[in-house]
Image 1 (tube, rainbow, N blue to C red):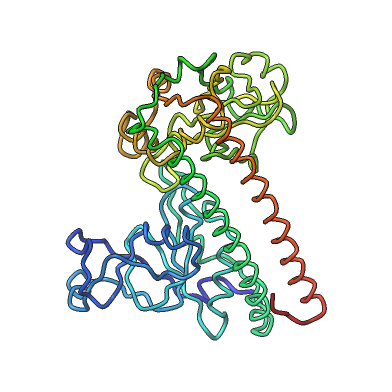
Image 2: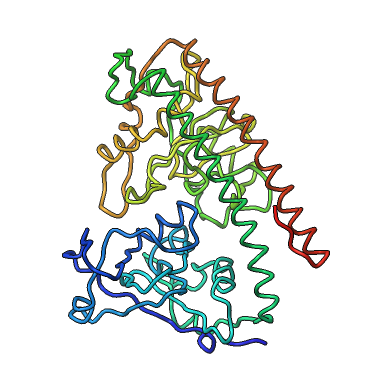
Length: 401
């Protein structure tokens, strides 16, 4: 059965969040802000539960707020793709702010959790107006066609996906534990890299580097991209301690040769030059090591390249640049407006880097290598568990894991 979303769902709009409700706890209805949606998703939840702000029924009447029922899928309707694609299910009657939207499945057509998984597969930026700040259009979602399976099949799909979600979430928890181990070991060995209570010698990043530069956007922009060739790294490919090439683009050899100064080498550090600072995955100042071969990649104008001298360990320096202490430092020194900021070249060159003995830096890098080996074991276990689920489904039965 194929229906339009507006035929099988109810749509809910958010309410302006008055500042007087910030931190208010005596109300009976949670008043969720978009940040609450992000916090719940980032903690691995599919349900919207944790909240810091509450409102009474009298207050709701005063501000003419819309009460959202339980079982509604809510998500940010304004922002970049990362924000738009976070969604959770309400667990009780609540309010959402006017930067969010809610869609509730009518129970005679759809299981609420099945509808959540259906919504999870949608790329919400596809349904957003192309403006400076993308905004999801309710009218486009209303016209979306959904192929509705039987309730029996919906329950089966929910059972499968819930098990897979739990496996992936357990993997996420394991990775967080690895990250906590790295942070704890770093502080134990070297202390805070900004406050520098251990009084290590400090050098500017330019003094321990043979090259610091940023890339360029070739004339013609995206028209220079080709199907295969030299990897062209943009800011969306650089994350904290990770290069993500899932949506990478390529340039040809000729374009690459014309940008030889920013040709990337193995163990070069890449740092994002511009971005926002108001999110938990702040796009400004993210840093990662490039682990590919020399001259197999280049960078655009929103990324800095740092090539270190042999006197320091690259993994040690990247750990400093991706620490929480350095994130706070970058927030202080960056320039620009509230929504979009930038790190200037001279600021990058003058980044203070503590200088413990090279032997200690190498010892720490060896620890990271051992942890990385442990990380590799986990994905294979996930694949085996998911395979077991799908195999049991092929025989018409879901088995426990």
